Image 1 (tube, one colour):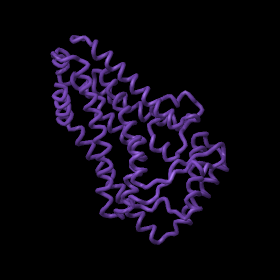
Image 2: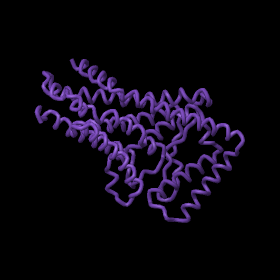
Image 3: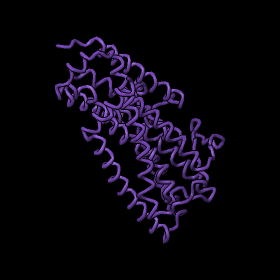
Image 4: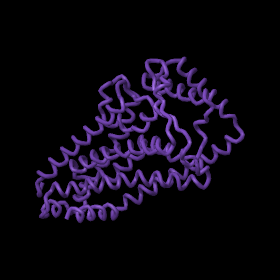
Amino acid sequence: MFIALVRNEVLKLLRRRRFAIVVGILFVILALVSYSQYRQLRELRTQNWRAELQERIARYENRMRRGGLNDSWARSMRAEVRRLQFYLDRGINPEQPTAPLVVRTFANAAGFLLLPLLIAVLGSDIVSAENAEGTDKLLLTRARRRWKILTAKLVTLWLFASLTLLLGAVISYAVTAPVLPAGGWDLPSFNGFSMSDTAFRVDSVRQLPLWKDALLAYGLEWYALLAVAAIALMLSVLFKSSAASIGTMLASLIGGTILTRVSPDWTAGKYLFISALPLADYYSGQAPPYDGMSMTFCITLLGAWALAALGVAYALFTRRDVFG
């Protein structure tokens, strides 16, 4: 019975062709990334990567000495300087492009905003679209319990969120392997760069095979996307208009991202779910926009937002007036 509900919701989502658009967007973006990485690989053959890293470190240090940076940008820039210096001291080129490295980097780069936006597009009208299509009253008057109907929609959305992340990894490897070195999954990867006040903590750096590091990063981003899907479901229940639910979700993601980057002094911003979304970045050692945002804090924060959103969604959906 419940499997039939989920299958019905999957068919609805496929019929709206939103998922096909999401896959198309991923393919186009990753094809452009593949081309840029191929050009970088060609340029690296004639360039001195050590000199490039030294130049970047000097540029960042000069920028910090000039001042005028807010705390968030200064913290991120100091962490990047220490990270680059770590690789330089050990003779490791951190930007040697390979297909596995592109797959690993996709979790960080896309998990910051692209994937949450795509999941928002998929999920923000999963309930409100019923009103636009005129099937909302039929949905609410069915013999099945309403909480089962909403749970089927939630499971469907989580399935498509998981599939989107998986396809992102598969497409990123498929489009880059023909033009970049396809091997290197066993190469060492360094993560966990952190600072204590102004000192760089070498003891916090973790060395893992690239494949294991990638699995950890994708696992964290998968968790973050499940939280985004739960919030998108709540907005879809809250608004009867698909445009309103999608617009609110997109504005929350984009506006929250801007707010956390330009207003580091507003410490209450660390309790916004958008502040905790780049879990793969924080795992890799990138400094969070606010102090006190440990990995445990971010995971707990996203879980709390997801549970609160689901609580609101179920409360509203199960009590909704059929003729309201």
